[in-house]
Image 1 (cartoon, rainbow, N blue to C red):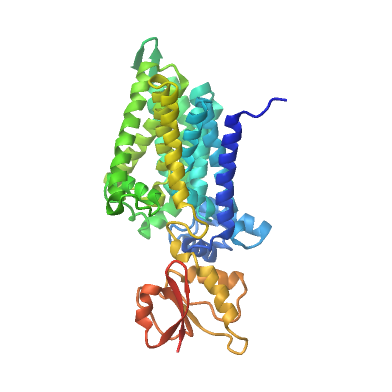
Image 2: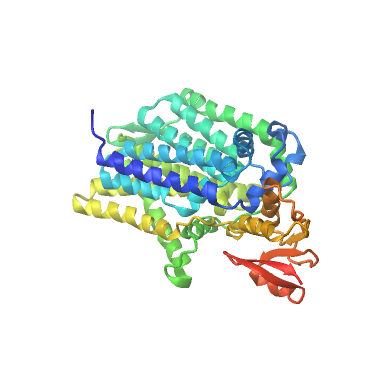
Length: 489
């Protein structure tokens, strides 16, 4: 029996640690605003009816495949944080295995492979979404599966791999509509790659009708099916102006990715964002240029085709966003909606690292370069590591604790008390009120806007808002994250 190699043991350890991190947080983190809204609105809907019913689309919060998945998990395991989030934890497993598959198909060199794992997996902002019951984690996990099949097609030239790539991208769209950008970009990148003809020492372009008809039939049929299924949902969301959010300029898309990925770490004080944004811009430009440079030198090597295909996918995604902006008036993707650029950027950096180390660095120089690409993301993940909150909805980190605390404070003779909450906390407070079967106080009503309406026996809000209730309320308890529960005098 062969002993496991050091590379196998190291990669399995890293992947197991990452999966354990997201799985634990799926169990431990308080539910967040958007998760709670999805549960309260869609726990009893028939997902199939959402292809036709306008009532399913009050906002874009209904991520179809994710909604269906957590409904099934809830029916199997009951209502709990981990049950609702289980589909996204499984999506993380898919992401981990497919990212490892892409890396090991390119290299088995220890330090370069570990650096590839870090570049694709050590982003704390990306990891957040594998611990939440939202469609973003499910979508990006399926996109990574699509990328794995896409790369396999360039290694072996087998059509089932290309079909699998498009089908997984289509499932990503059903998990989150922003993945339409990824699917369209996949089609565009594949079309450009199919035009390239390799001959000994030369590269030419040729349009072959038979090949193009066969190759484009797959995404065309998939696109038509998605268009028929999603025409009404997208029209309903357009009428609700749900696609007007986002960045006003293309560069703002990537600034938002850098800002979110920093996870509020201030390495250079107030200049941190712009320094890292400039650094990212330089590196991604070099990685994109490197894809064409390395491919031109030896186009017959499979990894160079994969590198070029990744670069074309990245560039086509930018072109698709720009076309939507100028033709349809939609804004550019931003923040969590641009999540697929994180694995694409990681792949580009990995291919550039492999190319530079293989062609220009030997021995200790290559190990040093790869070691830095491993240690720097690992250090950043270590600084961002937490078991209490996620980046975008950190304000809900103590909502579960607050509900349980308040329930324990109210004596049976006082029940049922009344409770108010600032609108950002209301969905999650209502979720726990329902799921925990609270009887000591009534669920807080939803009151929009920033104005606080005194009256309830208790009020939960940001500590910075407490002065608005001074004179009528006194602080009962302060919670981590800057929230406070107040009691009427």
